[in-house]
Amino acid sequence: MKTLDSSRNFLAIDKEYSNLEDSKIVIVSAPYEHTVSYGKGASFGPEEILKASAFVEFYDDEFDRELCFDVGITTLEPLDFNNLINEDALFLIEKTVSNLIDLDKFVITLGGEHTISSAPILSHFKKYPDMCLLHFDAHSDLRDSYEGSKYSHASVMARVCEFFPPERIVQVGIRAQCKEEADFIKEKKIKTFYSSAIRRKIHGENWQKQIVNSLGDLIYISFDVDYFDPSIIPATGTPEPDGFLYSETLDIFREINKAGKKIIGFDVVELSKIEGLSHPSLTTARLIYKLLNFAFK
Image (cartoon, rainbow, N blue to C red; front, top):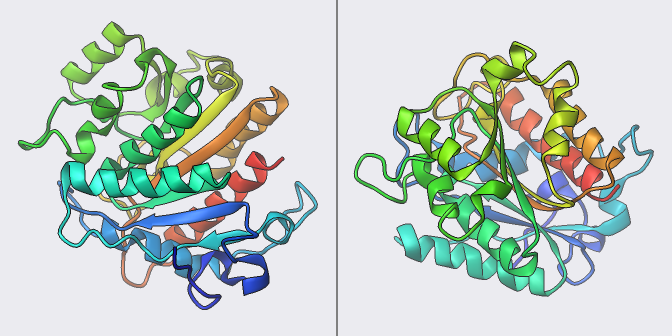
């Protein structure tokens, strides 16, 4: 497996702390974009995140440490899909992530469109059959197919439900879906925390704790950045109003740590590029590093 050097890797860290053998954390870039239906550019997301990460500080005051030097973070060369689409593209990602998990690595997968997420979810589910799935998104992504494709970004969680117990899925931030998806959620007992319900305080003042109470002890996270309000992340394919802020989102992960639950891996998807606008990429890169600090509490 080829890795990126400090001029291109996550956080721009030296080889001593970013080689594959010694690093506990591995970042896989999956710049796949085949079914995006509105704004385009998700295939540039991983590269933009890596570029921006060079400006993320190593030190985290909340944890009083420089995690990247404590455990090491290596970044692989981006996956080359070479015209692979649908099942073939997903197989490449799943095989890569599974091989890394077998090496006892903590794996982060960067997309690309949300379609890619079913592959690392499957890889982790094979290793951790008791895990649950925490899904951040503006959309529930539960359509059986969209625009003629069962492998659409709008159908990724429907594909996940074909191999993963849907009652172990917890969705946060949903605010755009069709009736088919709403019915599917009720039928399959998916735990969905709608944006409108959170804002109406249906889940109480500490909605973050209610989310964590719905989760098991082992947590895989799939994070579509359009979960955030467009004022925070406008650079995404389908931005939706009434989203969430960075700080209130971190409180979910603080509650995970308080509850003694464990993050076992995650993917971050759907960042696109807006020329001349840098803060979405930097925010996403910082989110990834912050999530790693929570995972390695």
